[in-house]
Image 1 (cartoon, rainbow, N blue to C red):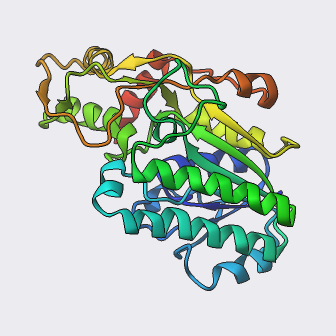
Image 2 (cartoon, rainbow, N blue to C red):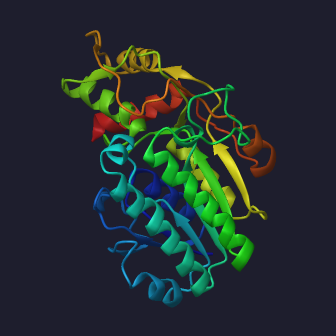
Length: 305
């Protein structure tokens, strides 16, 4: 299968590329390298440095005979989306809708979209969140992610473009840097290993669902053959407080200093845990890594990098 991965030089996108290549698929990457890194690029994939709004994207889709588009390119900072809503909408909404339109013009069969779980559900009324939980985004980022899900369904109804939407929990693992809410694992680990200064925002009791990036990549692989238009939570269903995360990482890295705490960030949710039971039932996906196993691999990666 010929697959285009947008954002394929990024933290998550590069792992998705690796999973596709290991399964025997052909992969083309587009990434403007604004946040992605050249060292993340798999040499077996064909790379084009370009922006989603580049007028060459449609020609690329046609020339490469792309069958599936996996869309990971995005503005991913919750705080930045509140500080500059227009930029967030330009990248995440306008860029994505343009890509959907180019897909239907180029005859692409399927659109796999990396969405957000916690950022769009809002504050937790039911724990953990099922896919049927009402969406009430707490940030511009969450609203932009949810809106693209609606556009994907419109394109399916009108033009027959198939889609699978994957709503991610907080993703962590090798190659992650300090971007996005989930970057707390990378920030903590790097600072614990190298003596940098860092802080826990708020009281440390915010509850999050941390999913390992290799598990996430496998969900994207399974989505290729899923025969229906559908939406799935990709998380563990297990909540971990920031204080608990700190303790596990401190033990894994040998860090002994207590955490410094500061004021909570604008847009931060108190609780965000996703129910993955639908993905287990229909997509035949479930996480293989618990938090301890995933963090162990992550810490080993940062020790060597």
